[in-house]
Length: 464
Ligand code: SAH
Picture 1: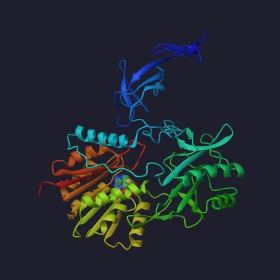
Picture 2: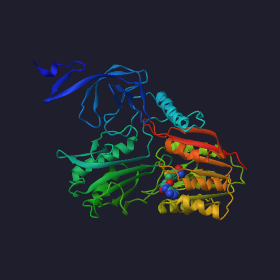
Picture 3: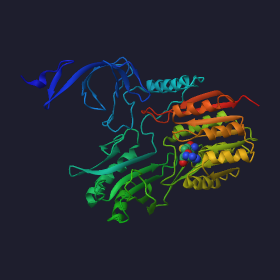
Picture 4: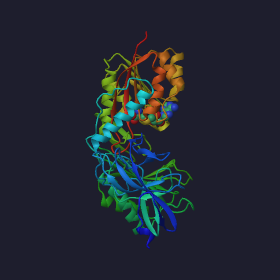
């Protein structure tokens, strides 16, 4: 008997000398990361690429801690399902919802955020979610690592929480230009015999390539991250890249020889062009250097900032704080209708970019401070500074209780909270709940195909 023919449900079959169980599972619901959740005996499973009410056959490996269940075949398909056009879906971990129709992705995101608010006993109704027109090629930034695999140079993204590169041919959410540049770098490396970096031995030359693209001006920056200063055939590398893609406006060598998972090193050398690109958001020009934080979906970012503007509804008399201001984008958008804007941000480079951007755009009623946002707000309380509107856009981890308590002392009429993590958002809003009322909130779909959400919430003061 050929054991591999024995594919019966709930039967152990022999596979490479081991017994692997096959099971039929039904998906009950989705968790907050878009994975299908259900019950197998006493075990709750969470499986990617599995939709509610679907039934499928899975292999089951009891000994494995992660990925115990592997999909073999879907027996009953959900109407939410759509064809996935990506070769590395479920491997690279970048997009989790590509198997879901766009309308269902939006509904899923809305539900996840509403559930978070419900759990926190806060009003949960959301203003109409702002969908994205562009569902592919929406990112303005691509970063890939290069490695040797079986004697060949491969490139791609790191698998989630690992050091394994998932080889890539084409990424759906990146633009054609970004995809063709990183592919051509692989060819130039082969032609010029430039080796990719080996993490274990810490040898080899090229670690990463980053491409940043400006959606309005069309400028393109290529950053080559090298292990050390020496870059053999540097001018030939630059020439080939420029000849092939005349739209590239600047090329930078970034030196990173440290043993770290941080992509960019401190030191840089401009190999071609001006060393930065420029782009516009809502008519304001921004200089983007290699390390500057800039939202990755420019079209949706404009909608996000317009929403902040609408919620702020400034009349020209207000003092506004832009906390966690990055390169000053939100503050500058609001400055045209405010009396004065005060930006606070902890990254020196971002603050210097923000000040330069304000100067270039002739926005004079804004000032940026390089400080920890909490310490800065506490100082504002001590100095008794009067503010009318506070906008905050902290990282995923949210803000601090001290920052929120400082808001309660400063008593701005409005607080607008921009957040990329609804759990920390709700946690923070709870601190303000006694003195503020949630007026409105919405989601801007910045990250199509992924479970990530960007939320904007407007709170207004209820106490004198
Ligand atoms: N509002 C900007 C940037 C948001 S990203 C935009 O829309 O582009 C969050 C920013 O918070 C980052 O620029 C990060 O450097 C900054 N940040 C992180 N921790 C901080 C802290 N403790 N104090 C001040 N800024 C901080």
